[in-house]
Each structure stands twice: as C-alpha cells, then as structure tokens.
Length: 182
Image 1 (spheres, rainbow, N blue to C red):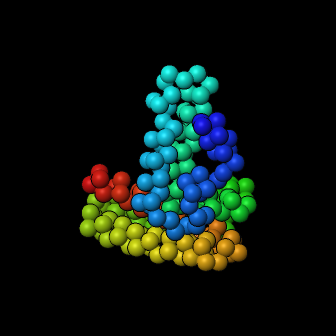
Image 2: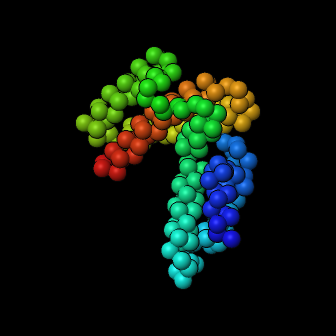
Image 3: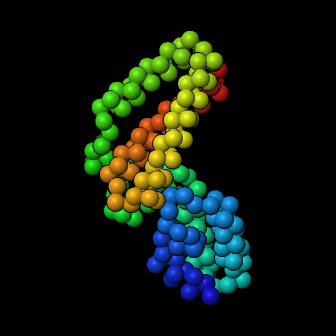
C-alpha cells in the first residue's frame, strides 16, 4: 500500500495530495482534517517493524505532507504556490519587481515611521499603525484571492499583489516585534 501512496505522491501537486481544489480559497478545517487522516495512515511510527526502505518512504511521505500543509495553511505561500503552478514566481529575484514606485516609496515612508516610533517608544501609535497594516493586508488578501480564483488569467496582477503582501507582512512583523519589546 505504501508503495502506491508514495508513487502517487510524486505525481501530485499539494492540492491534489489532499484532494482539494486548486484554489486560493480553501477550507482550512477540511484541510486540517485531511492532513490528520493522511498522517495517521502513513506515519513513520506505523512502519517501525517494516523494512528500512518502507520506513524511509513513510518518512519522505510524511515530510512532503508536512511541507504541503505548511504551504497550504499560509495564505501568501499558498498564493505563490498557485502562481508557480501557472509558471509565475512572484518572489523571483531575477524577475524584477512589478511594484509601482508609489508603493515602494510608501514602504520607505513606513520604515521611517517605524524608526521614529521605535525611538519614541509610542506604543499607542505603534498599535494604530499595526491595525492599519493588518486591515490593508486583509484587503490585499481578499483582492489576491479574487485574482487567483475568479480571474486566473490575471497572473501579472496576482504576482504584483503577492509582492505587495510580502512587503506589508514584513512591515507588520516588524511592528509586532517592536510591540513585544515595548
């Protein structure tokens, strides 16, 4: 049985591995349920008395399941994976950024504001900025989901949205770190 499962594993993408549609909008509860079921069926502990080759395959399958689960449960990584399935890599360092200059200028401005807030230790302003960024991130994810699921031919726009989200999430992470310190 494990041989069949393992050979099927390499012929599938992460979505088909879990038997879910190749969409940005996925049911995370259903994904978690399917992940647990698959883990229970091929967990390496079930193969301790089997030949070494079967134990290795079980370990490989479990590692692939975990990698797939990590990608599919992370909105930005899932979007990048979908785009990669369409031949696009939003984070290709050699492909150049598709972000408009005004967005990049805003990122520089946000970094300056963060430096000022760090120096002033103004927790209230830091929280306010964090809430604004989280709202912007949420809106960007909604827009990205529509681009990926409703208009899949809009790859360039989806790539740009994913790139913007990476910047916004990095900035949000910095704010969270600063909030924890202050």
